[in-house]
Image (cartoon, rainbow, N blue to C red; front, side):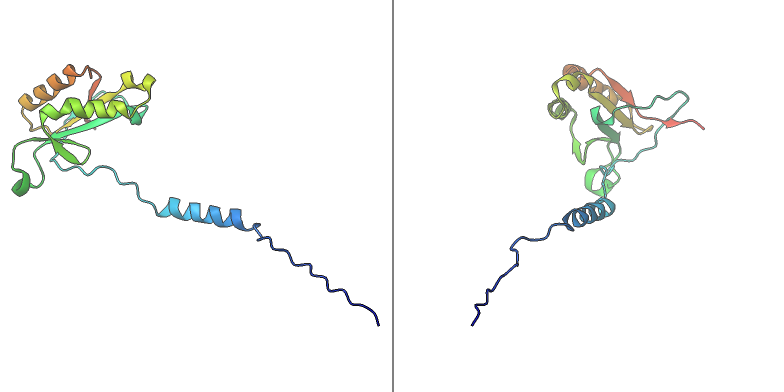
Amino acid sequence: MSKFKISSSTSEEIPTSALPDIIFMLLFFFMVTTIVRPHEIMVEQHIPKATQLRKIEKKSLVAHFNIGAPKNVHQYGSEPKIQYNDVFIETRQIPQQVEEARARLSEPEKDKLTISLKIDEEVKMGIVSDVETQLKEVNALKVIYNTLKDS
């Protein structure tokens, strides 16, 4: 009698040839379905028009402050408020917010931080002057005022 040799050619490796395709399909799916939500503006904004405008080149170096009457008058009152990101702040909190914005930047970019003020045209100059004074205290002297292009 002859001896039969049982040979097994099964491999215990997991086939990974389709793995890159699956990863790219998942990446593409999340890129398409993800919504980038900007900060919600919680103040009234009727921006004045300007004739000469200049576009910001690097938007990551800009901290945005919105000033205007709150949209929800029943909850926040009708006095103009300062909004930074998604929260209302007082004028005395501006230096802290500017320092936090600087802390998020790399060392060479800290001096290039620009403060963007988007102010409702009905806001009195007193609150704007207070904001400018607070910005001067933390040496945030690069200030731009957002406007709409005059048609």
